[in-house]
Length: 472
Image (cartoon, rainbow, N blue to C red; front, top):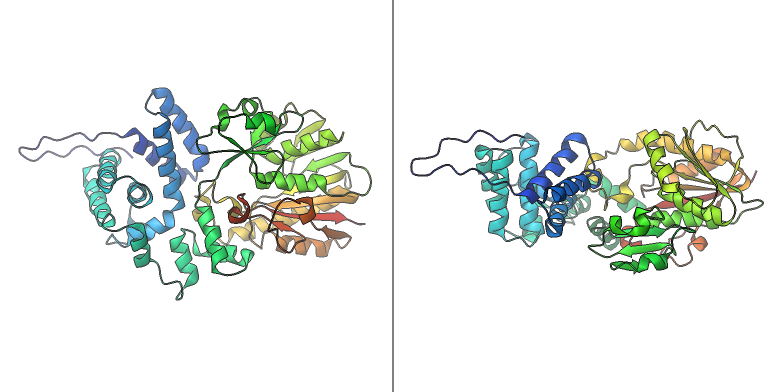
C-alpha cells in the first residue's frame, strides 16, 4: 500500500520523513502476500530474502529476524487477533487488513520476542508511517501502547474463557488454532487435556529441517559431515539440520542426490516398501506423486531391488517437480502427467501402490501456519469424494497379493479412518495390514493396524498411513 502524502508539519516541528526498516518492511510484504494472494509463507519468503541479500540490505541475522516475524505472527494470529480486538473500538473485521498486519507484527514483537517494548512500538509505528501514512500510524501507536502494558500470559488470561467453562475456545485462543481445528485434532488424538495441549503447542514450534539421503545416490554418513547435521530420529535415511543449517548449501541437496523431506514422509515410503508381498516385486506406483519427495525415495528403494517406479501426477507443474526430484535415480522409473481417478494404466498392473491423497494439510501446520486460518470445515466435503476415488483407483491398480499405502498429511478422522473404512466396504477382497511392525524403531504408534504420527510425539508432521493388501 502506498504511503500517504506528508501532512504539513506543526510550527516549529519540521516534518520527518519516515525511515524504512528493511527487515520489518519485508515481513510486512510477506504477510500482505499471504493475505492478498492466498500465498504460502514458505514460498513467498525465500525469494524476498534472496532479493534483499542481493541488494545488500540483509545479513544472516536480519534474515533470521524477518523469518521469525513472519512465521511467529502467522502462528500466533488467533491469539493476537483476540488481544487486538480487546484494544480497538470496532469489530476486527472493520480494521483494514494492512493495518491489522502492522498491528500483528507489532504485537508479536511485544509479546512473542525479546525485543524491548519501546523498540517494538517505535519500529512498528515507523513501519506504519511508511506503508500506511501518518494518520493510521497514530492508530497503530495507540493500540500497541495498550498492548505493551501487559505480558502475554496476562493478556491470555484476560481474553480467553476459563478452560472449565469452554475447553475448546480456551485452547483455541491460548494455542492460536481455530476452534474447529482444536475439536478435530482432539477427536483424532483422543485422551485428555495434556495430549491436546502438547499437540497444539508443537504446532506452534519451528520445525526442524530434515534431509533425506536418497539410496544409491547419497548416504547419511555424507550428510552428517555437514557442520549443523544431526542423525534422524526414526528413518535410517534422515539427517536433521540444527538451527541455522541451510539445506541449499548442502552439496548433495544442490546436486539432487539428497532432498528436504520430513521424517514422517520418509516413514510412509519406508513402510510401504517394507510391507510383505505375495509374489513378484517389480512394479511400483506413486499415484499422487507431486511434488516428488516420496516418489524420489520410493524410486531409489525400488532400484535397490531391481523394481521400477511409475510416478503419476495430475498437475503438469508438479509433475515437472517430480521429474526433477527423480532425475539421476539409479534404477528405471517413469514420470507421467495423468489423473489418478482416470488412470491410463491397466488394472492390476502394480505390486506396490502409494496414494498420498490431497487433503486439508492439518498435519503440517508447523510448516504452513497460515493454512489453519485458510481452511474451513466444509473443505472436508470437497476432498472426501476425491480421496475415496483415489483409494479405489489404488486398489484396482494393484494386483492380487499386492499392497496399497493410503496416506494423508492430515490426522482428521474424516480424511483418514473414515475414508479407509468406507472403501474397504466397497472392496471386500482386501485386508488391512498392521503397519506398526514395519516401523520397529518408532514409539507410540497407537492401537493399529494403521499408523498416525504426531508432531508432539514423533517430531514429524502428522502423517497418516493405512496399508491394505488386495486378497482377491
